[in-house]
Length: 152
Length: 152
DNA sequence: GCACTATTGTTGCGACACTAAACTATTTGA
DNA sequence: TCAAATAGTTTAGTGTCGCAACAATAGTGC
Image 1 (cartoon, protein in one colour):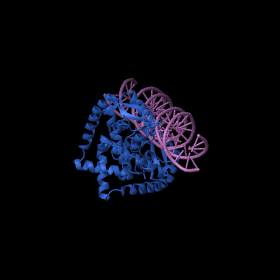
Image 2 (spheres, rainbow over the protein chains, first blue to last red; image 1 turned 90 degrees about the vertical axis):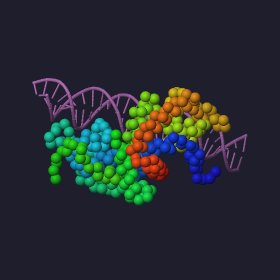
Image 3 (spheres, rainbow over the protein chains, first blue to last red; image 1 turned 135 degrees about the vertical axis):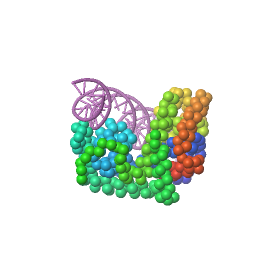
Image 4 (tube, helix red, strand yellow; image 1 turned 30 degrees about the vertical axis):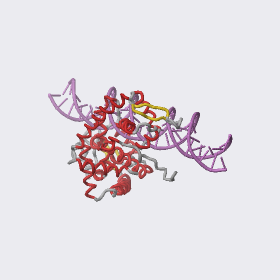
């Protein structure tokens, strides 16, 4: 046997899966997820946490539910995320001015610095993946199509 | 610098997320997943189970680990999946001829019929999503790009 | 034949992510 | 004023995922 230890799926017929966008999307997204984890696991940041930070960084003062709605997930999932990010001194809960029920989320000073280096890592990873495409125009095309497919 | 609490998510700046393929992939895949669940939840079939059935249907006699390797997930995850599909009388475990450790997976008669109607539903959903793109050529282009991005 | 390693199915564990329901405190609106 | 709606939180349930073991079996070199 060769030391390539391949014997993967070369002789497997994927049938209908080959034409399913949902299946291909899942495979591609799984690959991105694992690569992201390789890059950011030492910093304790998952893709979901990164998205929260990115939103708060660009939109200081948003409430937890506003961030949850922007990211399309349940607001109950925000609690643990914000708890962790606050514990890591990345973002900060401040009581909202006009609503004593809600908090306003802000980046801490160290959080801004952290997000800067974190973004550099993520962008490096993204650039490596984007280089698999032909050019920047094709990347923009793909981004646009994925946005179309993400709409309800 | 104001501490105003923003209350609306209508004008949220997604910042770096807008240019991240990983984020857009996740959103698109989540949408496909939820749509798939709406279509197939009454049949008790998840996207992962559908993939297993699709592989076994086209490749009768494959072992569990062969299917797992084809789908890119751990073989330990196959156990519960095959258990469920066998309980639903969709696929069947037969002892492998030349290896008493492994089973060969086959579709049952009712399983073939079940997969036929199931495929129709899934293809209908896929066609509705594919119609968001310009033409069939763009769909093939997207499938090819996603396959490229899924490779390690 | 024998020892050593690899592989298969399986189980259990821990780490997450998502969903839904319920609860408190507060705000809103008729 | 009072009922309904909302923000944050907690809890429970479900599902997935990878990792590490394990017994049984297969393949390998000697």
